[in-house]
Image (cartoon, rainbow over all chains, first blue to last red; front, top):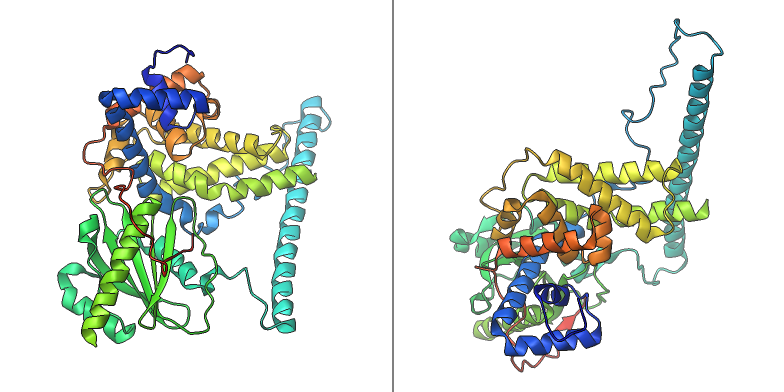
Length: 295
Length: 166
């Protein structure tokens, strides 16, 4: 990457990957203005990146399976390291050099095992202590905000439901081909059943389900874009006192929350912020319109 | 041992990102396999740090080692991996068509956003090699059928009752 005026393919990649300094970036961006072919390339790569994030970002948001929790702190399975069976090796003289070395290795392995056991115990004690602290804190000050319970907010619940269902092979309980059934079910359990139409933004409703809410059963409608990116609309009858706090959401997934007609709505998905905003506005407008019709 | 414990704890916090990378690297070859790779990588790096075979200067170093271990294990395990099912989005099928090295280069640079130098260290290749793989991957993947990355820019007034919570 020379500082000369020529701009090569490597510069275009570096632009997409944020590897250029400000001055060079300006130069490459200027270059794009006059070279539509290169601009199209860059746009294509950005689309690839967006599609990759849409497809895989939900994975980083899911709850970790037990096998991965603290995998780095736990000792590996028994297949690693020398076998310590305690068996007597008849063929080996007692204090030969190789066996001494083996003993040394074993001793160090045992030391490691002891240390890791200690670490695990410490971690356990820390968790227990923390839990006790939370419980005690709750007793002392019942109105203290509990920051460790993100699922107590609508957006937190929406995030959890999103992470659970959206990447599932069967994301919805009732798909849109049985619209009547879906609407009746949501109406009966959740009390709201007018799925907003987001087709104008390329978001097709694929179906919905009932999911646990903060205080009552909540509804989850899932929309899908042509590239497979999925956005979910979560709704639950809102409590007047509920104060939503920041949700558990990861990089590149945004959640937008609003209230209407006694319900809390959360739209959550991996689309760019502007797309999410547009979809939320359309959904809010559509919901407000049906609300008006009802009256 | 404060620092080592800190690094080990930090590695656990890197699990979700490693999982995302592993899932993409497996390109539809199954969730069980991809999680197993993350687990093996974290456990092996954790064990090597505890055994002092590996002395990462900081958490970033340790994360690079974890990415590298995962990539090396995946390279071995994905030789006879199954193809993505038809329910997967087109981008996953595109990934599966790429060679393993090209796929890893693309994912490290774009999905994980590691930067070229770091990504090159993860795959254990010179920066130029990584760039060549990245270029090849992007050219092969194409952009046909993918939606635009940027939202249509129009003067859109943000409704005041919509609250962006994240």
